[in-house]
Image (cartoon, rainbow, N blue to C red; front, side, top):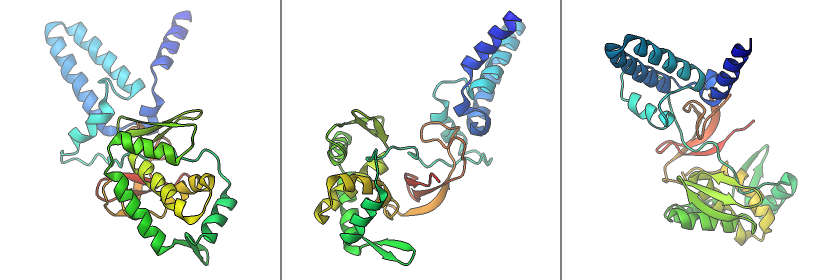
Length: 266
C-alpha cells in the first residue's frame, strides 16, 4: 500500500495537464511516440529487456507529460505540417497576453471615448472615428519598426509609472508591482492606442483602460500590416499562447502572420 501511494505521488508529480487530456497535441504525441519507438528498437537489438524498459518508460512519460523530448511544442508542428496528413493543427501565436490596464471603470472609459468623438455609437454598434482610426494605424506602423527594447520602453511609458519595460523571448515584460507579459501584437496595438488618445484630451488612466477595448477595432495587423480577420484559434497542447480548455476560442488574428490581436474571453 505504501509503495502504491509512493508511485501515485510520483506519477502526480510528473503530470503536465497543460499538455495532456483535452490539451494534448497530436503532432507532439506522434513525433514523440516515433522517437521513443526508434530508440526502444535500437536498444532492444543490443539488450532486449532494456529496449522494452525504454519503450514502457517513454510511453508512460508521453501519457503523463504529453511528450518526452524537451521543447517539443516549439518544433513538432513545423515538422509534421508538410506531411500529407491532416493533424488539425493551426497555430496563431501570442493569444495569451496581458494588457496595459490592471483596473477598469468601463462606464467612465466609454463615456470619455464617446465625448471625445473617438468612438461613434450607431444603434447597438460602435465605430471608430475615421480620423482617429487613421492616426491609430499610423502609430502602429511606427511602433512595429522599433527594436524590441525601444518598443518595451514605449509600452512601459504608455502604461504606468510603476512598471519598467523589458523585451524577452519576443515578448514585452512590464515589470513592477504587477507583472504582465504582452505579445508584440498587443504591445504595439495598446501602446499606439494610448499614445494616439493623448491628443483627445482624455486622462492617462482612462487612456490605459481604453487600450484593450480599442484592440477590437484593429483591422491592420500591428506586427506585419496584414489584414486582421475574425477566426478561431487552434494551438499546440496548451503551451505558450495556448488555448487550454477552449480549443476553438474566437479571436481576431492576422490572415498573413497569424498574430492574435484580440481574444474573446467570454
